[in-house]
Length: 117
Image 1 (cartoon, one colour):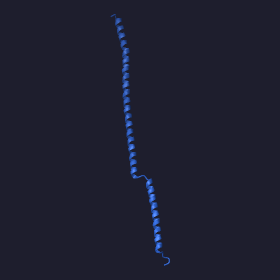
Image 2 (spheres, rainbow, N blue to C red):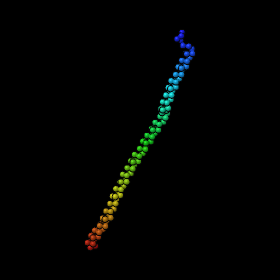
Image 3 (cartoon, helix red, strand yellow):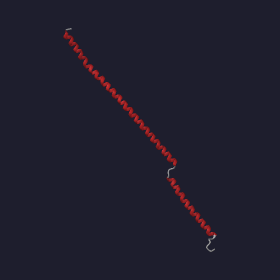
Image 4 (cartoon, rainbow, N blue to C red):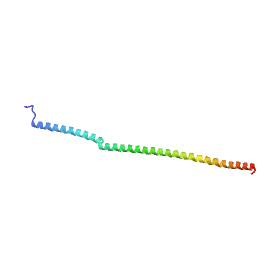
């Protein structure tokens, strides 16, 4: 029975074992706490993702607005160009009429004066 541990020795071994176990658990808990602190909580991740999605939606909407404004501007430019062409045609007709009508009057006067009237 000389090899059997005493009750005091058993108690000391039990206390040392519990202390080692507690240290190991504390170390594991510390590692878990560090990983949890370093990781992004899922709620924060979800909020960031929603904010990102909202930014993308806003950017897409802004692009649509700019494209629509560009199309409207192009249509207005085409209408303005057509109106300028119509004005130029009217101006040409007016200039032609301004030069032709005095010539016609002169021809009529020459004809009448040549007839002796």
